[in-house]
Image (cartoon, rainbow, N blue to C red):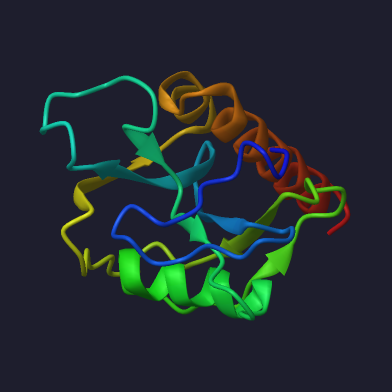
Length: 155
């Protein structure tokens, strides 16, 4: 995302930082018998049946002016899903939009705290990559999933 493409305000009218990173994505995952599942949130803006661009995304959001990107991703994760797990930045994530991962236990309780989202799912990576649109969301998610696999292989 270039400076010309960045949003000037958040969906609820707050100003967005005018230098990169403009925001961050938190790919929250849990281990299951067959691999991992990632947390996806459904945006309520276009109704509960909408499945197009920006319908399903990991918790994410814009960085406010003068806000540190680490503070931004922690704030977004807390606001959108009620979670506060330790976060790890994904190496080589885009300069314009930072990607983080966070592992949680299988019994974690997700709480939607705002009106931006109407529901959530835990999805296997294949399903998550199918429903996360547009490509800019899918690319960040793909980076995170690769990083999770690489980190698991190092154990």
